[in-house]
Image 1 (cartoon, rainbow, N blue to C red):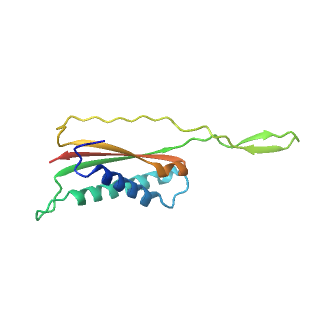
Image 2: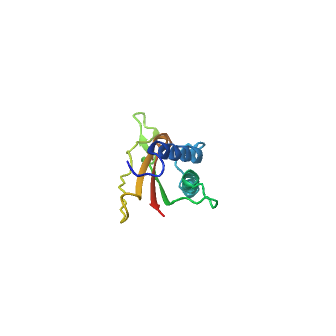
Image 3: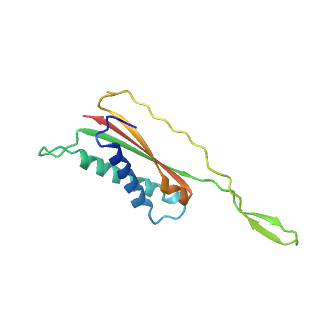
Length: 142
């Protein structure tokens, strides 16, 4: 976890949790055609909250940080239904779960370690919807 975050880590977690829940509250399963809309909603919600919480009391209300937010949605895999012969000779449709798709992601940056940083979060609510949602937040002091 980042120790130099402009927003406390507990608040970062809550911001990301709220953004995912808001964007995916009515979703019941992974739908590839919707992923861009979901990612846009998650990212925009997080950015809006971060900018609001780090805005200064100056007249222009500017944040002292630049932010970059990445949202990745990963579909869980399952075998397509297959038709098998039953003992009675009739066809039966079965489905077998094959687990999750493997994924590894990494980020790196050259910056001031005292003022700049990054933080990541995995939304637990995606499990029941057949997907993983991983968020990365980066900040750079201006």
